[in-house]
Image (tube, rainbow, N blue to C red; front, side, top):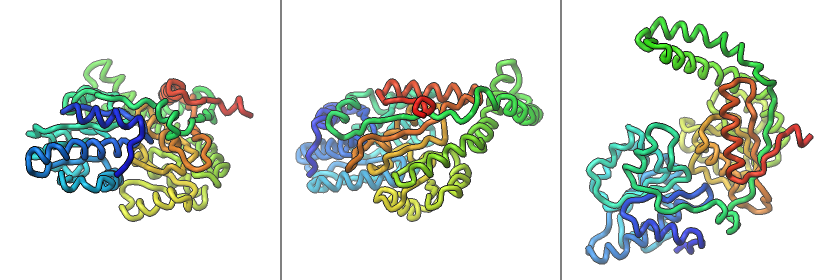
Length: 381
């Protein structure tokens, strides 16, 4: 049986007191333990009263998260006496209609059209767990409609005070000059725009439609020119990789191809992605968690559920506009570990194009709002 931390106790109580609701808790807070403890304390009295085992479904986004759930539930050794727990991924598409309790890990995914159908005809209890339940798109309200309101928030300060989160230090790098890629991007986007207009004329009915389609073409090009194939930026990433070759260094990339191109310049590094094969992926992550692998590139699979407390340096090579993803990604290096004084986060002020510049400003504002120590690399030289 696991002894709950002080800040986890009210979170578990909030679950038990609410038939529908969401626990919002940052990475490193032990959301899985909170959910497992809630399951045990919910199931035991109801099983005795009903004189049968409760049917519980735990749904996660990745196989790694399913494994974490299994380990957490196994810690409550008496749970099988009171409940039969089924663990599955959202993508499995399994109907949850017959379950008494459904736990939705990283619950912000449930509003996706391909996932939400699993809740059809389910009339039982529903709990959600997430560091970022508030989506930044048109499906944001659907999360709360499908699960319920946020019933408890675990504050980041409580984790720092409890010694469960390391302090965050962010260094902002600026390898490119202001606006230096805007003309190049504009010229490369124009042929894409012309081709799109020729193929799908019905998408260009109004001036607003034309602007929308041009922005899509610009965004496609700017990711390639401004991020993946940006020579100055990539040189900076490699420099950071060499500088931190003795650290436990996680580098987040937006595409496999980008990671593989950078990997060739950092001997001994490995690129981890969802389609590489479960065994290879698991072996690489375990080697990184154990300190045997020093530098690991990872795609979006590192956004959620990656448990590598040893990691002490993060480089955000992918950029991106999502504040939720940035918060989750930085959390990968903020879990406490022996001799870790802080988590170091390298990010970029991508001033080379106005699309990227707006995204960088959003991420930097997030870091400041979270209380991270933010410095510009030029001020440190």
